[in-house]
Length: 143
Image (tube, rainbow, N blue to C red):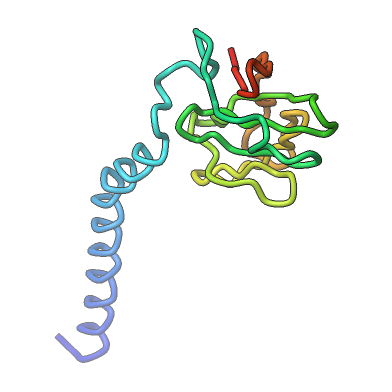
C-alpha cells in the first residue's frame, strides 16, 4: 500500500472511530440530562398546598426560585405574589436560576418571564403553568 493510500485509510478509520464513539456517548449524555431534570416525572404543579417560606424572601419587583418545590414566585407590587411551575414545558427540567427577570432552563436553554410564565426563548413553546399562591402568617403557601 502506498503512503497516500495508507493516510487516506487512516483518515477513514479515524472518522469511523469518532462516529462509533459519538454513538456510544449517547446513553451517557442521556443519563446526564436526566439528572438535571430533577423530578421531571412528578407533577409540574403541586397537588397539595406547599409552604415555601417567608413572603419577605421574595423582593418587591423581583422573584425567587424555590427549586426544591419546583416553583418560582414573583412580587411586582408589595403584598401581591404570582407563582408558576419552575418545570420547563419543553422537557421537564427544573429552572436553575433567574437572571434579569428570566427563568433559565439548564437543559436546552429555554427562558421564561418569571412574572407571567411566558416563553421568551425556546425550544419550549408553552408558558409555565400558573400556581395559586397566598400569604398565611407571613409565609407563602402555593397550590
